Length: 392
Image (cartoon, rainbow, N blue to C red):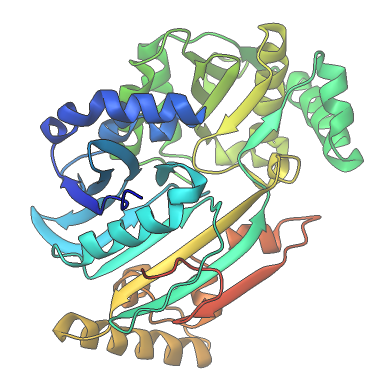
């Protein structure tokens, strides 16, 4: 009997590091039939900038690539922080491997990162494995839950689509669309890149959730990679754009990117109106699925296909940085008990040394728990968590 080959791993820190294994990654993705665009290394590389640098880990068994864990490390003014993040808000784009290799691949990736200058890793993923981790050197907190997901099926007609929504959402789509049209607002299905950018510059000043420059630049990089990209808008009677939305297609799936709305017209529910027009347009164009990149809105999110989600907070137990994180965690928890607001940066610094409620607030589980009509079964585990990966 031939003994199994030991697993070896390497960190892919630069774009050039991906080239020797580019074909192997593509072959693995094709073999698995994974349709997640975030597992495409080219898409991953478009998200990198001076504040986020690659810390991907490729795992090999002999000459065979068996898995990749995509991760970034945060930098401040060109200085590495040791804080790493894997996966998007809903857990996509984290791990590419066969289900039977998942525990081993993730285990090796974690140890490779934590032995290479990373002291804190937040791993957000869609798990296919329920193995167990037990590692004395690590402080581990795992959160598992069923979240609404980020994909929505599109039926053959817009009326059928409305029929898949709850009665209140269906009524709101129709009501606010009529109300917006009565105010002279109409749908613009095709904006030029220049028109879109001008509208974004204007709406960023009057939006509740303005988009930062890095996010917008990432969106534009993504849209240069695909044909058939779309930029939608709502335009007022005076010609002013009051809402914009963009996205790109892959096959029959349309990926929704940034949306901005004029907060001064929030009584018209422009976000819902524009998404309704977008869905009607995309159904007519033949698309059968929507994917909301980074998570769906509460309005449509409850009608997305649910998916199992896992969030792992992994920290080194010892060292000066660990002492700082424990102190930050103690302060955040104290402020929480006193009912005082705590800066987001301090919560990030504390990493996994927070209470369960505070950790949940940093994951996709929080909106799933608070979203209308949602019920969620969550499990939180610390250190010897029953649903976290085993140490082999």
